[in-house]
Length: 605
Image 1 (cartoon, rainbow, N blue to C red):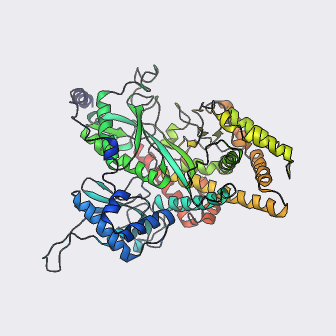
Image 2: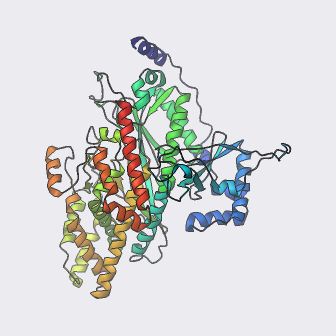
Image 3: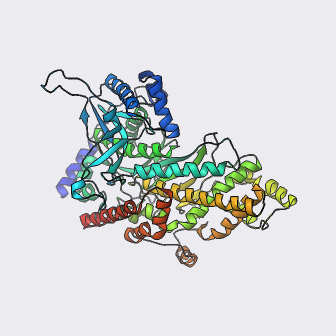
């Protein structure tokens, strides 16, 4: 092994820098290989374009005749760019993406008259074999078929010479076999619940979109050095060895000058991202040696999740050109920082308002407080479900060590907002006097933007922190598909918003309260009920572990412990009530994730 290691070091040292030049401005390149609005307007009829827009914005169904016209335009666009094949691109429960390529090519029965063919039937649905994908007991051996169905809300794109069509993946019997289907259902429920609550403040709101901005951390290792380590290649981390004399103890890598070879890789990667419409914006050195981060501008959640899955594929392919191996494992090396995928989540209305961003008027700030407090209440009531959503064998190594948040889910909101909630907790029960209401609106609710001006500190040990105009779910692992965390988070907040509206409406109708009085009364109770989840201190301390136990918060240090929350009555009731997953789909995910954990531990052993 020592001779292989020396040979790998020699190869790595003698690498020549890959010659790379940007082919144009980012603004010009962006989305060039995406069948976006610009491309659709050029290649689709007006009726076909309106059909896609209706499906994206309102969920209207596209009939087969219209699908034929859309497929025709999509094919012509793809052929104009040198594409030879198409695939339904989906996200099975393996944690990676899947694709089966078919050529734009058919012949007649006698082999003559070859043509480039792609119709509505091929666009809308395909039938890949589902037998070898994880199913958790959903399908029988004689029902091995699965179906991929087009998701028009995520635009088709070209990668290499293949047209990729984002799709959902379901079993022969109709259950979801992928990450995308439950996420789409959760986002629909969130839209409905949040829109109803928004109407208390603005009758013009017709749609609320959950947004996501992920931050992808990763390690770059020379390919020869990685291949000299069988443990690293097979498991994604080193299982034995000695810590380096110089790791991150001098704090000299974080935000330092990016090494030339790594920077060339990043430039090449960013160009590929621009072509694919992935709006990457930030790049920098992370804390550990050879660790880096990439982050995009936030997007609608479903599209953001697709882009993150695609990005991880693209990163590995670009890495091959530069003789690198990308490590997404949450803890590839003992003794230095692991990697996370911070999920920055918020809600935006179709009127252009970020519901988690305070504004200038007391009424808009009451709206902010409504969504802010309801989110805290949702996390408080479902913290074990959120922990289960980020559980994996690899993330177990990261949580609670070297800048990663602990396995105990808590919410950090900062000292100033804690004071605001304390003020609201003192609201009078029942109808508010005109003086109290005026005082609340002017001196508490009205001053929130000013209070937040200096609230810039972020507790790096908090798994779920409010960061000014969004919540940052920091416990998500770098290898994870964001769908797991986002499906759960949007589901619990949607359920909470539904409950909130029922309670407020009941006070308005049965107690003859004014709308503002009813909202203040319900929020006051939520603040009292959610105190246990709020924590401003050091999440790594033994004192917090003891205190969290006293508060009744879960502390699941391993995936098997954490995953039990998936099959609790609370979980079954939540997902079935909202129509996101039935009992069979929830149980299947539990079985799949437990089996994956077991197999990864066995491989490492």
